[in-house]
Image 1: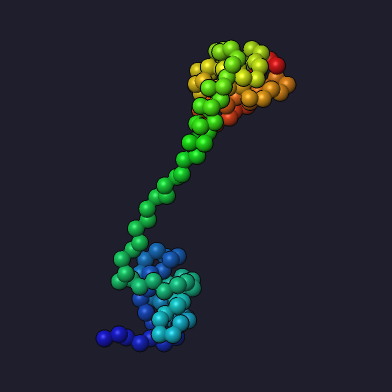
Image 2 (image 1 turned 180 degrees about the horizontal axis):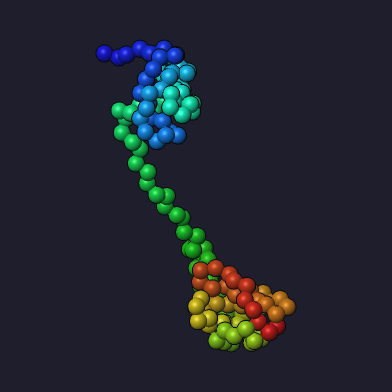
Length: 133
């Protein structure tokens, strides 16, 4: 048997502020379904959540990996690299196309030169590195 409710009646609902099932007053209805309720303990107005319904299980989001585009660019750059291979040093001078071997990031290709800096494309991403240029 389906019970019929009306605005102003009391009903048990899960309170989103108190985080437990409490006594609520029906505030708004959509047709024959309960839309909004008001908690008699804290006074908050929220959607009706039936305490008999099972709680929703939250699943963590799966992060999308953007590495594939950077890896493809890095592999193409390594194939075209014609410069010398250097062990990375902040005091060294580099040219565009040089291969840099960094102790943390691995091998990379010098892409752009700036005053005392250079952009180096490593397998995971492009980084701004210090240099003597």
